[in-house]
Amino acid sequence: MGTSELTPPRRAAGPWLLGAALALVWLADFAWALRLGPTRPFSLDEAWRALVGGAPLDATDAIIVRLRALRALTALSVGGALALSGAYLQGLFRNALASPGVLGVTSGASLGAALAIAGLGGFGPGALVESSGRLGPLFVTAFALVGALAVLVPLVFVAGGGGRISVPALLLAGMAVNALCSGLLAAVQSLTLGNFEVARALFAWGFGTLEDRAGWQVALSWGALALGALSIPFVALELDLLAGGDEDAAALGVSVPRVRALVLFVSALLAASAVSVAGQIVFVGLLAPHFVRLVIGSAHRALLPLSILAGGALLLTADCLQRAWLPGANLAPGVVLSLIGAPFFLFLLASQRRELSSW
Image 1 (cartoon, rainbow, N blue to C red):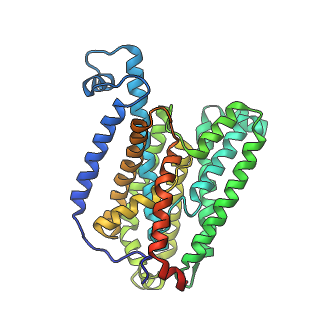
Image 2: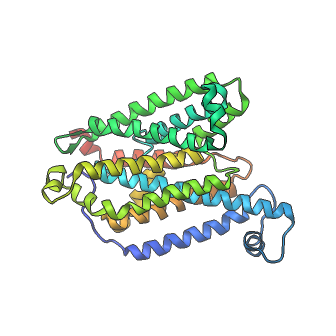
Image 3: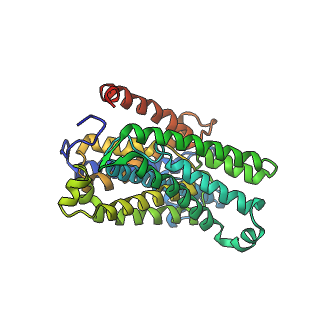
């Protein structure tokens, strides 16, 4: 078995210890995020009073703290959703190189969301614009889900065959899908340049944004993440058995079509919710599960929930670091994670050059 494939379960460290450490990172990052911003820093006591009551702060300060809290909660849920989606895809395709960004899932979701935004912005049928009303955010999420599924389903047929996943076909198909979606997204952006608000929204979706997130967006991302987490008990053991191949798993009683359909749908839902709320943020789904696997092994019963914690910690930590070190730059989270994730992905490929030469 090549190093690109998932290794057998091992316990390099206790899952509970890693979970506790990541939970502490969540708390520390959340407290740090409340203090950071273009305006003055707040003490933890001031932030606490703004969120839960007590001696009131100035009205403006209270709004600023709440906006920072919404940004932090969005980063935690979006990072967790992307990481869980990546862990699911890596287990399904039995390859640690799989992730929503590498396979083009986030690109498909971003394209679907862009089409919905353009349609709701007046570039679609009038009936769609008139009937959307408060359902506009749901249209964006639904279109993002369709876009994510439109990418995932063909990948199964392109990369699979005889119960074996072809890694070269998987990566090449992901490259092709990313290129196609990028071209279509550029076409949508060029057609909407005359509408500043629509063009600005599409630009933000292309690189990801955590700014000015509303309460319903936070609820949407956390709701989708909760659904993804609830599905873990139904597929964790089955994904472990699928590591030996579809035929072996079926012989052990695994309903391969059911597991594959459920994992594909949940992965697409997680990626779609993340993209519809924060835009396209790549490499979280690659980095976070890979880190967890290195520490505790590949048993999905622990890998999947810990990937949620690792993904949220990764995205919020990256956001806090760039705001602390580059306060005037305001880099999009997709840009920051690309600068981190792309070299790591190249490192993974370089470390597997022997296996790549034999494919």
